[in-house]
Image (cartoon, rainbow, N blue to C red; front, side, top):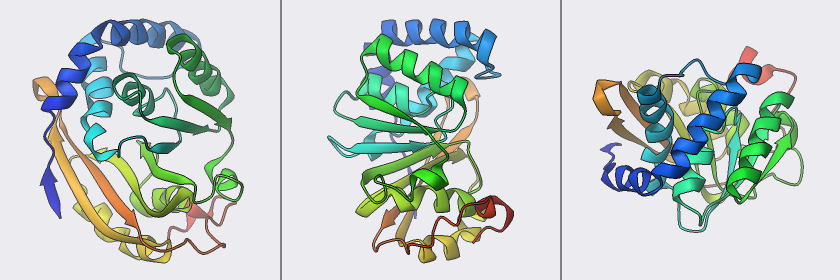
Length: 229
């Protein structure tokens, strides 16, 4: 089911917290010189393609949810979401040490309710974080048939997997139907929206978790990417 996402509230929240986002932008650019966190460096593009894009899906996160983010990178969508939604708590899973350093620095600077796991998602999903999250989210990590194997094992039954994707996701969603089913996913909805200043169309794919993920998933050893479900 495709739904047009109303982003007016997200726009208002970004304006309300503009000082924090200006400070986060400066921090992002400072660390980017050392850590190569993003290729997007122009102020308007950072606001639209990183900050607005991240906050646009905030209405899909239940009040007080504990969220696990896979492949956090420079902290999108997690850090903008925490800046506008202090009721959300996050566990950030990131396998690259320098990116973990940046995430920890941002958490400390803005006193964010989050912790960082310096691990691969396929390893973390076998441990204490398995099926503990109300929401698992990811942005710009992998195609849905691969991404769902990384993310759905973290989601508790009744929770949701949210994937931030580009504008046209019909092919990916169709390609991933078998993976969703094998991993315990049920109802799938897509939420579309436009970035400001004509900077592109985006979609959040929401997959509801209706049954436990079988213990053999994620398979690990790169099979999620080399042989998607």
